[in-house]
Length: 261
Ligand SMILES: Nc1ncnc2c1ncn2[C@@H]1O[C@H](COP(=O)(O)OP(=O)(O)OP(=O)(O)O)[C@@H](O)[C@H]1O
Ligand SMILES: [Mg+2]
Image (cartoon, rainbow, N blue to C red):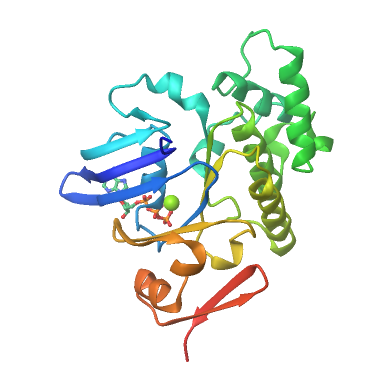
């Protein structure tokens, strides 16, 4: 079985800065990954590579069985959903929420004059319902709260029925209730066998949804530790990745971390 993602010694250099340093990472069918690391560790850059938006300076990246650099990325991109703040900023504030989701069927932002299939319309409606934002369908995107935007963006990223879904800090800026609702929605997504392979970048172990299976810890552009969540999420590994002495606790299927002492 081919890997969904297979990065081999991926290095990204910009000028004299090495942003990703020899990252080797494989993601397989059915897995749900969390990526943790402090500010500037290279998480967003890693998702840029994993979504086919950035090519390695050296090393190789195979996405859905195709080698980046040898494949038409415009054919690849609809098969990989990405939700990030940078992409949210590109959604026109005046666009109706239902169109924000619908247009993703064609991998564009801003509604042109494409003819949409009825099946697309009903899929968009189903996704808005799944993320609890059906009532906002006719509102313009610019009028939504931060939490509402995050949910619409995830619905949008799922619209093209991707094989891989990459989420860059989806809970950033949410209040406690909003975060918990999002964690629950992601847990539901993780539990559904029809869901794409998931990769979730976050800053907080509290935001790891139940059902996520693997963890990648990045430090200074390098893989600090990677593997099954329960094996990798230890105080030693987390302390090492963050350069801080940390205590990690588990309550049921949720995690917490705080400074030791
Ligand atoms: N074009 C660039 N030129 C030079 N340095 C860059 C460039 N793009 C990113 N960087 C640097 O690479 C590092 C990694 O950036 P990245 O956005 O991937 O980090 P991150 O882990 O997502 O951080 P955060 O948690 O703050 O979102 C940062 O130090 C950033 O300043
Ligand atoms: Mg980032």
